[in-house]
Length: 243
Image 1 (cartoon, rainbow, N blue to C red):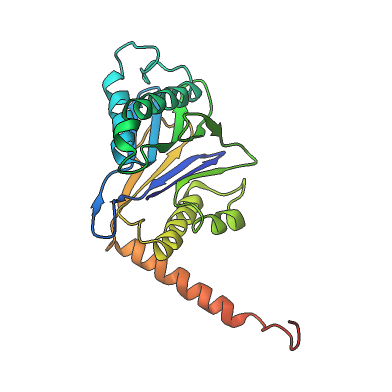
Image 2: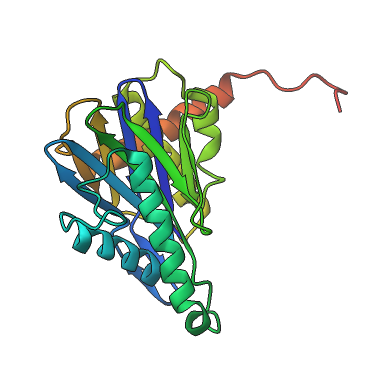
């Protein structure tokens, strides 16, 4: 299991992914779940969850085909991020169809992806590619998309994220979303790769990797927990006989 999150805002995108991969409680490993493909006219972030062999095969094939002129796989030549999402979905179907009969006796062969970024000529966009290879796009009415272990980190995003949220505020919300998920599910864990992409910058320089012992990560979690405790203490109890 893993947890990946993408947030689409007027100012750009926040993309985040954990690094834990596990095939049982005694087979824990770390694997990078965020792949970046950049050119002067595009920044593409691909986040993955599910069968690690499947998702790595998809990303590796995309990297190998980049710049090669193959209209079905060359992300450098894609005219839009929609076309990139189509490429990822098509490759995912191809890999799963190829490997399904071999993998199914041992586990689920499928995977899923978040594809976010910007191609020159259009605004930043964000897509979620399902295990079937089809996909949906984030919009002003649905500003964040998640894959993997999604339920624990969703409530804070539902409550706080809005159209006016800045990239820095969204990055904090993303980290708190990961904190809630990690606290409730052992299959998700740091390091966390966090990208803040500013619209029209065509730069992925604002990428950080937050380790478990990172001072910022520790302080963020501590202050959030203390703040929640103080808020609960300040609330009135239910009236007698209310239940």
